[in-house]
Image (cartoon, rainbow, N blue to C red; front, side, top):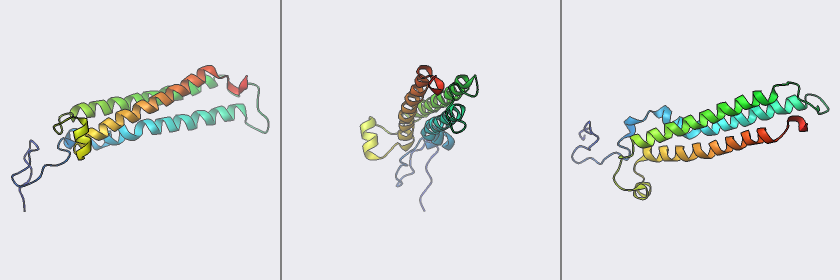
Length: 153
């Protein structure tokens, strides 16, 4: 039986180091949130806004000239803004986790990714990328809301 790692994450003599030594600096929920928070927010925003807009303009057999609810654009805008804020929050959590684990393994990003070390840092970097991409997608949805009239009106 080998000795446990020391508190500063240096391996005990004769024991290899853990590939993600700073894993304890980031909460597991934050790794999940940074990776799936923005995509889920975008998916829910898309589902809710399309459903609301579809029903408000086409509740029965024939389409309406004006939406059922006068504040349809405002309601959909709130959904869009909430999704945008969740995407931003996921990006901030990713960035903070990336900063916390920036010294996880020596070397630049190419060396770390090639060796498979620094998983916490890699997940944080992936979370930043995912958050930015879905932030852009959500922004396009807000742009559509500003340029397209509800019910073709």
